[in-house]
Figure 1 (cartoon, rainbow, N blue to C red):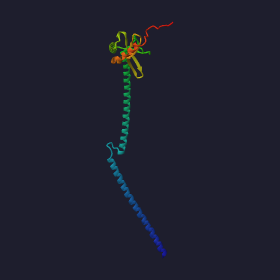
Figure 2 (cartoon, rainbow, N blue to C red):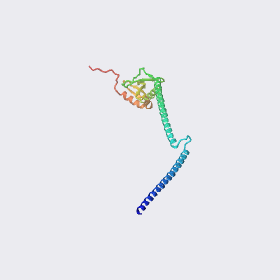
Figure 3 (tube, helix red, strand yellow):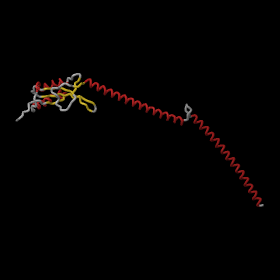
Length: 229
């Protein structure tokens, strides 16, 4: 009796377990079906939303952004290349212009001045070699300076006819180009010579006259040397 009850109880337990498995399986199938339906609905909704956000070219926003970034990078590279080309062209134009200006400057210098091969009386007192030039159009600075100096010498009691004055222009070169020195040389009767800036003498001839008076008081370098036997 007890065995039968036990056997019956075991049978009932197994049957119940079978029914439980069936219920569990049915529950799992139901849940899977609901989850699958929900997942499918979500996917369709997502596709609908994404398709609604596509661009006029049919691209998704991510693809549109990527293509826009690539296009912007290409535009920047092209602009940089154009800028470099423009800079190089400008530099070449500037270099050509500088070369032309330099050539024109040299040509102008050659046309404006020529070498002065004439003998000056008096010759410059400077002991170094100089490149003397003369302009194609004579400068008024020379005559004007001589006139101002003569007036100042007369005022100081010095006879202008006793003083020799020459006007000359010197071409001076330096690494950056060249310039012209405009000077006069004054020689007194005793053979003393000194060079003066022409423009400075024209402005303040009294200063030059003061130097001339000192030159007159110096030894006579033209007198023959006395030989004592």
